[in-house]
Length: 453
Figure 1 (cartoon, one colour):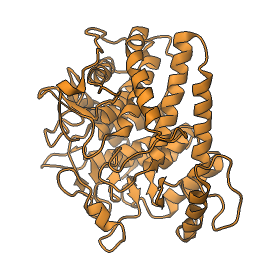
Figure 2 (tube, rainbow, N blue to C red):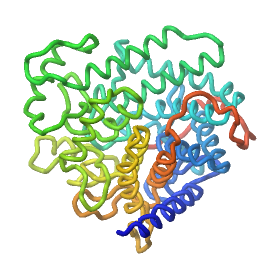
Figure 3 (cartoon, rainbow, N blue to C red):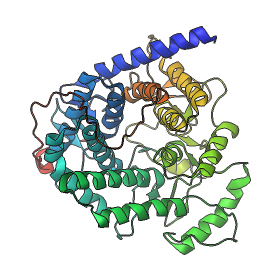
């Protein structure tokens, strides 16, 4: 592809992505997809906040207003213990807090989304109305630590990788928990004019725990034990077991640990967030970049990251467990869906991280991959915006017209222009939004039909 064609693709890709976000815009918030398939045609917490972050970066009045409506819809359907819905089907009057288990990351994204919306708009009325909702989420998250030791325990199918085999103390969720706590610290300072020292200390400790528990600097049995190791025996066994997995030239963050031990596959989104959220130091950032670029996880023909790597094959030990975990039909065939499928959404976060570190040429390389994926033909139409791309065949897969695949293109575009994905402080200029119909009164979950998702 010559430079002229590439620039044309950047322009058209952005325009079409922005148009799809507008098509996903509903009177109650962002739909995950315009395709009415399974439960995608609903207001989702995780998808809606990611679309909302793209809307804030684009500074699009209509989309920012839709983001506000998304947050209000989720708040209005908060569960009795503080649960934020995984998704809400407004037309059918149904709310889902998860499928076989609840979705831990729905509440985490919700806190981040509320804070980022407030930061961008300076909408103190919105923030004031959300405070009791946020406090219930905070209390529930504290309970999900179970033993009050700082890390969330995530059941299998408890986050975005709902049909994969991660569970326990999952890194991705701990990173979102860290950012959510940081946001709550800043909100507390703004509202009360004082520092919540207990929460700030908790946040600082969580950052140290992430650094100490999910990266093995020393392989084998030698080496000291970091100060904030969660469980010494588990950590030592995990470090020894990691040795056979460290034969590659570069290392990465561990995806999770549980009472059964550590997981060792590469979790792309977690390894991106640990850098994007300022947890990883420069050495570890470079190690992860090198792993991505040199270990063969990204195809030569399209620059997209897999959800998880390496692939789980039918003869692998984990295959039987993977086959048993699905909501409607089994999606995780080799190189499909979470099983080493390639995701524009995940890659969009990587573009934002690379841009924040001033690696602009590499960021543009991955943004081009996002546009090429989004342009793939689905159901006979170009620009299908697939959910994922097959890791070997490079064919589009999953649901088409996926909102967060479009959001990835918008996030990447503005990140390269110098806008951060997650802002600090409050926008004194205040983005204008439609603030009508503010009502976040809690809806008792016992009065709402539930559904899987």
